[in-house]
Length: 206
Length: 267
Image (cartoon, rainbow over all chains, first blue to last red; front, side):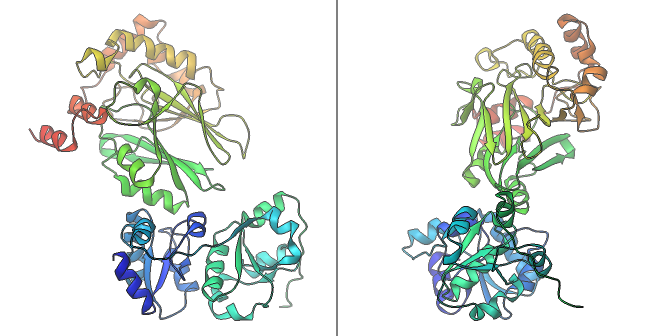
């Protein structure tokens, strides 16, 4: 699909799924795009677990061979995939279409300004229980779409996971839902490496 | 770190993807057109790696390289040793002996090892997430498992060939003994070829990795007492020449187009 066709599809409700790494996604992506990490091993499974049912997708991945394979994988998983953006972000911009950004912070910035943020932990319950940023709200990617409105209003949301893979997806969902979300690069691996404080919660009663 | 060896069995060729799993950046080494650019792009994406460098140990004569296309597709730099300047007819990023490329916690250091070709370089790999000791060396067509890269794949042009077969044999002997066999013996060896490859001789092992320790003790070519004996041994144990090697080399040097190469290989 060329840029005009993608823009028309988006106007009619299609969702752009951006499969580039978090950093290029953050620097510029199609308005409202969700992002997931591409890999052939389990992209289909993760998409099925995380993406809302019944949506129509347009794939954005670079370079082109990744986009073609992703369209196949998502199609086999039962998603309605309209196609992929030919020529990538360069073609989109050249056609004069707008882009959006996702603000990035590192763990030092999060640590220094922890009071400013509501920390959203985009890992699973067992990981969160083992140790999380003090005050972090458990918010697994599988629930993100349904629960986006449950997060407290008023403070910006800082989304964290182990690195920046699941958190990038959750941050993209939150931004699509007009929440003020930033992505914490490096995640808990960097947080722990710095020796910053973590909080543990007791396992829930069986 | 991430380290993958890809084997293209029809040509007994090994190419590599390596990188830092935290920085999410990596290098492809010696990509082969028979596997194709998509293969490397997808393998890198599977590992979450952004390809920031396409490295070649040398300008190959026995298989068609896809390094130029892969670099263009990914926006990565295409690296060759600086001795390739004046030999190849396309833009590349020159590497000096001892120069280190870094992605996250992974270092790749160029070790110039002329012999098989004048610009041949090995890549010493260190994963600083584990230790500052080097872990592996990609030896291209210098040190093979059980054998060495042959010194006689010339295109028949004095300027492009730079060295004669005899000079290449001497350089190969010295490069391996002085630059590779002086590395810590635990260092793992990952060659560009194995088994039936015609880039070396009959003693090349079908096993596509080894260590410096093992090759220092059990590599027959390198057990020869001096350069003259090594030269004789390598010639006596060489396999037939690789198919169409002068045409393939000419394409990889940028002297002829892919269409011209395909035309030549059909005749």
